[in-house]
Image (cartoon, rainbow, N blue to C red; front, side):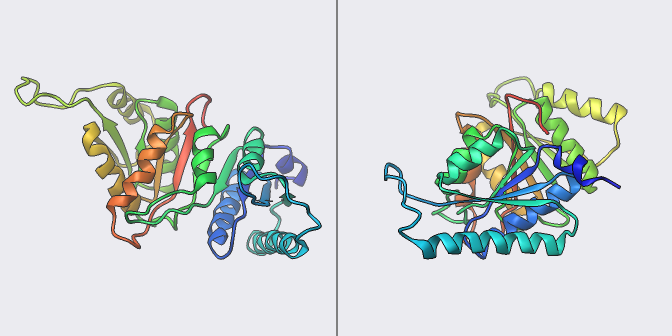
Amino acid sequence: MRSALSVTAKPPVVAGVGELPGSLLTVDAAAAEAVRRGVALTLVRARRHEPGAPPADPTAAPATLTRGRDLLDLAAHRVRTQAPGLPVTTEWTRDSPVSALLHHSTSACLLVTGHHDTAGPASAWGSTTTQLSRLSACPLLVCRGPACRYGPVVAVADNHSAILDTAYDIAVRDGSPLIVVDMQTAVPADSPRSSPPAGDVADVIDRWRSNRPQPQVDRVVVTESDLIHTVARASWRGRLLIGGLDSTGTLTDLFRQSTSLLPIGQRLCPVLLLPLSRPAG
């Protein structure tokens, strides 16, 4: 049995607590990850204020402050009820949500956040999650909805082996098929080459097949123009969509924009973004 000391000594899972009822999914997902990893859970709620505005006086709106703390207490109570024994701490901060969560990302094993994302033309993640998807120092799990129980894990890795290996490990853990989306430069129609080029992605898959446990693995080769449609299908058919996180935001922007191609109200799976500058945790 793990001791409380051994659990709390490890980097925690950190979750941002937003408004109810949407943040309950975020809290539940964060608790499940903390239990699976054997680490503590930290719940953070930040007091929102407009960019450029002076810091709010905490005595000026006691009802707002009390409500924020009540939401944290409710979230913590929910976790302790559903996961007895999981160490849970709460933090109410006057920092902006982005500043507070970025600070925690430097010492967390996973950051979990919600979204403003909906399928349809008005799709968006919201300013907080969008900035975290570019700047987080640790892996970021964006909870857009419940995972499809029988769907595949889908990785868009751009030949990044650490992301491919993480996706493979998650597929093995969950007993799920794995689809690796391999974007290739379009080949002219008159090219004599009739089959997709075998690059680093194909080499990684061959390595898996030779010496690792075997989930079903499929490699899907797409051109850049087809990638957004492939990601859109993965958002509603998959159990988890995995990609890289960096300051350019190129891939995360694609993830967000792809849902505009789906019908309004379509279920969207969670997204796991892994920093490209450090090994995945």
